[in-house]
Image 1 (cartoon, rainbow, N blue to C red):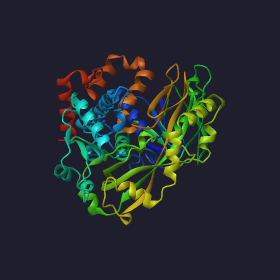
Image 2 (cartoon, rainbow, N blue to C red):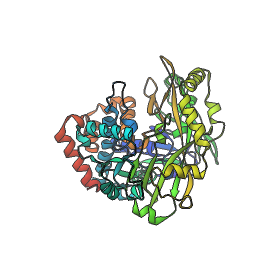
Image 3 (cartoon, rainbow, N blue to C red):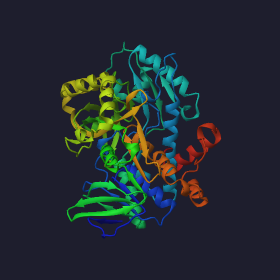
Image 4 (cartoon, rainbow, N blue to C red):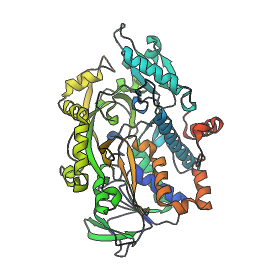
Amino acid sequence: MIFSNALGSEARFDAVLIGAGIMSTTLAVLLHELEPELRILIVEKLDAPALESSSALNNAGTGHAANCEFNYTPRQADGSLNIKKALLINSFFESSLEFWASMTEMGKLSPENFLHWVPHISFVSNQEDISFLRQRYRELTHHQPFVDMQWSEDSKELEEWIPLVMLNRDVTQKVAATRMHRGTDIDFGALTSSYLDILKKDGAVELLLSTNVIDIHRSGNEPWEISLVNKTGSFSIQTPFVFIGAGGGSLPLLQKSGIAEGKVYGGFPVSGQWLVCNDPDLAERHNAKVYGKSATGAPPMSVPHLDTRWIKGQRSLLFGPFAGFNTRFLKNGSNLDLFRSIQLSNLVPMIQTGFKNYDLIKYLFRQVQLNHIDRVNSLKSFFPEAKPENWTLSVAGQRVQIIKQGSQGGVLKLGTEVVTSADGSLAALLGASPGASTAVSIMLEVLERCWRKKMQTHHWQERMKKLLPSFGKDINADKSLFEKLRNRSDYLLGLK
């Protein structure tokens, strides 16, 4: 890999990926493994990779598999739970584990550098929520991915699962929890660095740091021309394929491209904050990711959880996230980002979305009014003995929720969405949760849409099956295949 600040005046690449985070590097590794001869460029505006959403302190670090997150199993009007998204998210994460296992088997990844085993727990403390959690447990455990989920209302047992949560808790309070032993914490910044190490060793990618994208344009069916600027000056490159994976910065770049498919989108920024424990003894006594239920109107990224984390190899304990609001689209962005993204094509959907999501606006207003004591009081619902002096506030990453024009007007979409041009020459990833955990599946979607002819060739098909043994199969429909592949991932990644 070449860390450079300038390229030749006639620079041309087979693929240009904008943003040096987990999404672009996942795509770069996949493309390189499928066709090593491809010439790939990654462009990053900051002076190092993975400093925005992929940085460990800027995201939850949870390997999202729907083990403990209530928002993946919403209650329907008839009282039943919709678990389709939970099964889908779980299958996406299994694909990520499969890919990491294959790269480990080839000697290219060392999972101990980015992945740690930590149980995933859902915890509730009132009768209504206990009923919901029991229903969730019963419905999920009918399906293979969740058959090992445990249930408990026994205080003594819960003291073993989550000692800090149960410490000096009111004995008259009803509590319940489910636990999945096979949970993970992932440092996506470290994983991004590991991917770049693979590409560097193979000389597969050029990386431009401290480089801004000024424009993305083309004439007719000609290759895309990307105008860049850094400390060496202004220059341009050409490519038949562009991927925009710049986190919150993807929407403005998509708008620069001018593709029709991008005109229906707007964005709503939401920032995050964590309480970080500064007492290492407390961090050592907790070994779980404990998720609760989110407040009314809160976005999925704001589901409260008390987490064991590994950040830059250091074991940590975090609680949050707490939401905030500013008009930047990136943590290192500009206060003008939101205003610059408003165009005639998305103005009406954005206004409509604001009226439809009054609960979210109220939630954000309440959140920005919180002081340190307020935040610690929220923590006490998880850890009754929490003391303000043991916790400090850390600013997390910036997320941009999708606003999209639909048949019923503007819609706020709280997931991720791949936007591609009609000819597949450009793709952009918008949105937030569940994000990094599902990077492999998301990048497979990009390949299927934008590299369709290549994906249909025998060479790419066979190579993909080596990288992802479940490729082209529904593991949730085949119990024996599911067990075989899960056991393979667990063995190679050290999850057992």
